[in-house]
Amino acid sequence: MSDFIIGVTGGVASGKSVVTRRFEALGIAVADADVAARAAVAPESEGLAEVVAAFGSEVLADDGGLDRAAMRKRVFGDDAARRRLEAIIHPRVRIALHDACLAAAGPYAIAAIPLLAEGGGRETYPWLARILVVDVPEAVQRARLMARDGADAALADRMIAAQATRSQRLAIADDVLVNDGVLDALEAPIAALDRRYRALASVGV
Image (cartoon, rainbow, N blue to C red; front, side, top):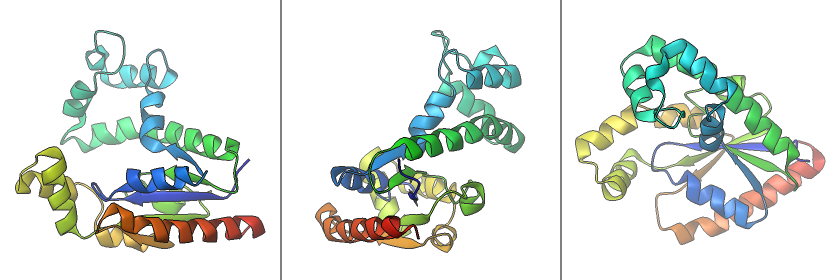
């Protein structure tokens, strides 16, 4: 059981998944908010039933699951609709992440939360012992989005602008991992963070 929980966050194309996989390779359990969000509205779930009650059956796909494309269109540009959807999904995600981390074996656990800054930070997730921000300059995010997703510069900029700013993420950070270079450069700083987190967890700090 791990009650020492590290929240890992970062902007789009910052390399959060690469970072959490490195921690997993060191034997640390990772609970992923994206996975929890999909489970929250899985077919026949209470969450999906609430979404249908709020938005209508047109957001269902032919297989009875959530039609994510239709849902995105429904909430795009409609702040009230987006907040209604988030009010259904986010509390379930927080509970699922907390439960998964508490159930994990190991000295500590990680909750991977891409939209942690946007979702209220530590006020919304008071059970996080520390917050690790994977940080990259916007120019690096833009270049990675263009290479990874085939986005043009304008689309990449819109994707970056849709999230919290770099300064807003850094404002909630206890620890910062700069990931603006080659992936091999992450090994030493992640190993150092792992040693630090194990030491902190052992004394309950």
